[in-house]
Length: 84
Image: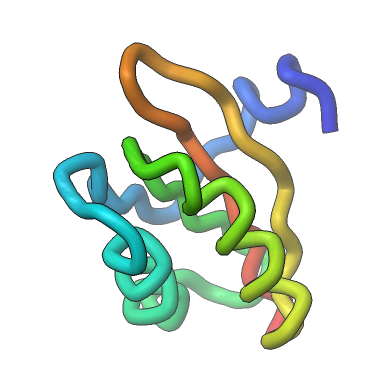
């Protein structure tokens, strides 16, 4: 996905995990993915650099789609589409 594609995503739920260190943001994603419907997007805000590599691996393992990450001021906006 391009930056424009990611900027246009309307997330069904946004999780603010900026104050958490690894593995906090990943645990919040695991806990929150059930709150969005299949096909919808969960957005995670994280200030931990490891989240950008942890989330794609977790998505591949459990069967969701990691859409990408957008840099923001001091954190990343990461997007996951629930597939099941």
